[in-house]
Image 1 (cartoon, helix red, strand yellow):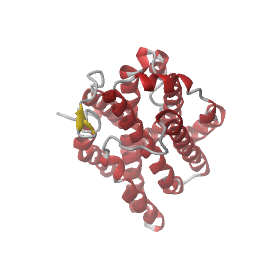
Image 2 (cartoon, one colour; image 1 turned 90 degrees about the horizontal axis):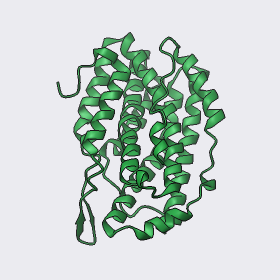
Image 3 (cartoon, helix red, strand yellow; image 1 turned 135 degrees about the vertical axis):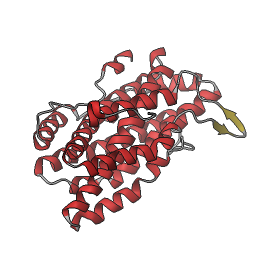
Image 4 (cartoon, one colour; image 1 turned 90 degrees about the vertical axis):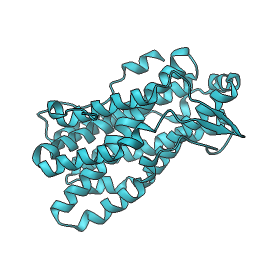
Length: 287
């Protein structure tokens, strides 16, 4: 599982490419490499590993995976306005692969909960107010499709910042590395490791295109660049609380494992995404 760390976090492509060139390249890459099948991943060892966990670690793993399950299913249902908001065939074509992949990730976690945890849906999940506000963002983006160009661009930038920039680019990417350090590097849960590795490859394309979109608008319009910064800053307290949460089960409270180092990993990803968008113009979240 250690090679999961070798998977590129995001696929930024070539800086000189236009958005259409980037989208067309990622479309081809998604067609070639995005066709893994959740039903083909072997979960037999995962069932054994789960039975051997302590109650606290079981609760942590279930809550950790429950958050991913909820996030994947939620965005799969809400993502169509993102596809509709971009202006060209190739950008829409690429984003259509993201929609399929979100449903595929949902399929994986649905199967995992049924076959490994023995339940049809999560009993608990780590709190994530950034994701819980995505419905309103999707509704605003959809409403803007008939609006003047300036409002449409603003809503597009807000939506890409919220989802590809923060939820996938910061929270999910930090989560993959947390899983590696808490479970994967110990050789546990090979099926879940394979699933996360495949999901991370898919989302490397999602975040890469999102960063290209945000960089494009930030370079073009100082007002939109400020809006991107404002959204990241507004969500920063919620981002910092994403991991490190205690978990209560039947009146017993369990602290997260020390290997999680949630705030540290989240802030590393936060800074990385801001550099992807603003480059050397980014001065740091805490400065």
